[in-house]
Image (cartoon, rainbow, N blue to C red; front, side, top):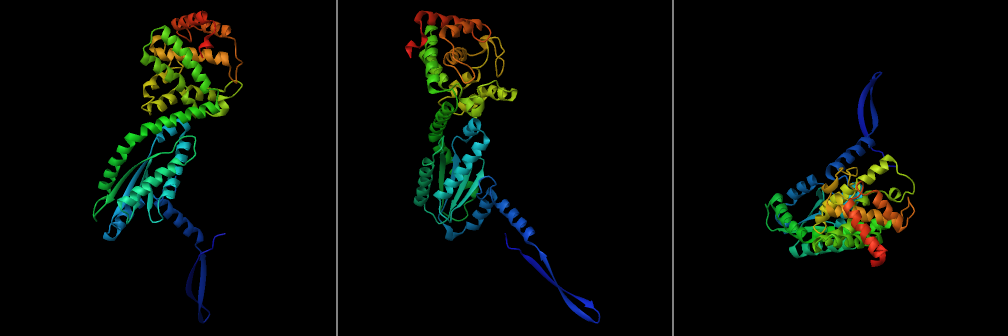
Amino acid sequence: MGKKVFNVTKSQKKIGPDFKTLISFRDISEPKKQEEKIKYLSLHDNLTGLFNRYFLEEEYKRLDTERQLPTCIILADVNGLKMINDSRGHSEGDRALRMVARILEKSCREEDIIARWGGDEYLILLPKTSEEEGQKICMRIKENCSQVKEEYPISLSLGLVVKAYQGETLSSLFKLAGDRMYDQKALESGVVKSDILKSLLKILSKNSSETEGHARRMQVLGNAIGKKIGLSRSELGKLSLLAMVHDVGKTTIPEEILLKPGGLTPIEWNKIKQHPITGFKIASSTEEFVHVANLILYHHEWYDGSGYPYGKKGKEIPLLSRIIALVDAYEVMTSGRPYRDPVSNEEAIEELKRNAGTQFDPELVEVFVGIYEEKGELYKFL
């Protein structure tokens, strides 16, 4: 238990002919604790426990003296945080921000001041620090990031500036650090986001039936249709990429829903119907996958307009999305899922024919059936 703190007061009171000294005790432990808590919260970031922007700005003023020079400032920005939020949820994004805070604490010295500046940015003040020593700390931060064992990479872009003389404003130094940080981000961010997306696909493969084998079979089937209808090499490449990432939006859906053997509740089905939108957001964040983002968005639309998420119909649905919808359905039917047993190739083909013009583009169904009849066994080219 905490130690109690008492406020002692003395007073005099006339009792009979004499005055007596009265001593009173008042327990002020709880108000004092509350005061300390309020003071702590006013100076610290609630999520990470680091100092907040207000504290750092005040500390900068205090340290703006000749004897603190040179002072280094490092601006750090988390790469791919929006992608983590979109794919894994904001609670996972918050966990990533807390991990970054611990990495910065581990990488910096005791006298350095680390603050969460806001959003996905952190600012570090390093008093009496040369540029060379500042660069070493930046390298230590990068190294400690690379050693984190998570399902997705943790990465920071860093901008370092040196305050050489007293009186330089924090805002001017922050702008210069920001320019340098964004130069680094331009070089690194695309690679990191691509790595995050690939990590998400591995998570999806582990937690659901959307395995690498499923994607590879879809690539083969989609390629067969694409070649038959005369798609360009560029479009065939896009189709192959789409087969790999079309269900990346399912990374936000709990494993128990993805692998549920029985029927879904309306709430669970609603979560499933959101995954094309989530997939669109994730792919839009990456330079490598942005050109298939729109195709992900529409790959569950039906030819008659009764699909999701927007009820597009017919040729309003991009051609590559229509092809993926067809080969995805065929692959799921023939390989099976927790909620349904696999069927024969012949049964799957008949199902596609029955749904031509409703779920599927009838012209593409005709092409696909023609390939099947010609080859006899579609997976012979696997």
